[in-house]
Image (cartoon, rainbow, N blue to C red):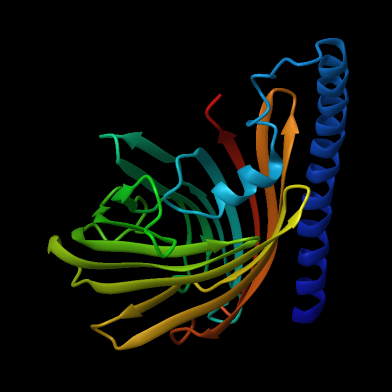
Length: 289
């Protein structure tokens, strides 16, 4: 029965992802044909939207957490097998906004606001509402180092915005670091943060590690694998999902978007925690003209 539910859920997510990508591809094909016609009609001119329409370049920027690309991912995740029959529907609204602060440096802001609908994650309870907001800010050089290293360093804050008992009702702060390299179609690196509580009822000491590997395969498409792992220093417990995903940058009308879908299995999680998850991400992209 559980296997049947998994197959049905996978089918729904995959059909949704393919439908969105097909719609976006139709829009992009029509737009590219229009752009080709404009080039032919205006030989020698430079189209202002050329960079925005370069789907491979946008996919490459999207794979870099500290790029100069403004993006607004809407990340939906369905996770199951909390206490056998529990499940969670999680929508993370996570805008990424880079700001130039000098000739050589950017300041990158990333907010993660969870919207949660869950049943039996806390035994015997159905809950819905907001989770706690995680706010990260990195200072990052605009250009890679001589060795090609791209990096950012900054601070992360846990802000108690949770409702209906979903959040920790506790403030937390700590450092965050991201390091990566991009070589040809490959992007690989690691994002790290550590949060300690500063006020509130919860006793928090939590580490987040996200190793990631992505490969661009042309036409705005990317395949990737990552692990959004956490370690609770208080309970000495790891939570380690392994996620795989496929994404494609396309155009909806005048709006550049990325559609991504994937799945994950948990290598380890706390007693009564999740065992598997499905994910769909719609990302609005706002490249510089």
